[in-house]
Image: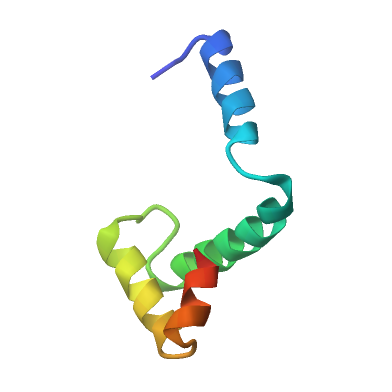
Length: 72
């Protein structure tokens, strides 16, 4: 689906304002870790609730619940 350039630009501008700047680096680090895990385990093209649940389940074996919340 091709979108008009104006719509794409508006969406990019809006997404840049959604997250506080000081949280952005942490979020991007966690997203990169998730994407690397996903690419190794199920492939980059697969993303659904089951994949996310498996990822969180694996993290829960390493981190306590209070620390796990900092990942999201």
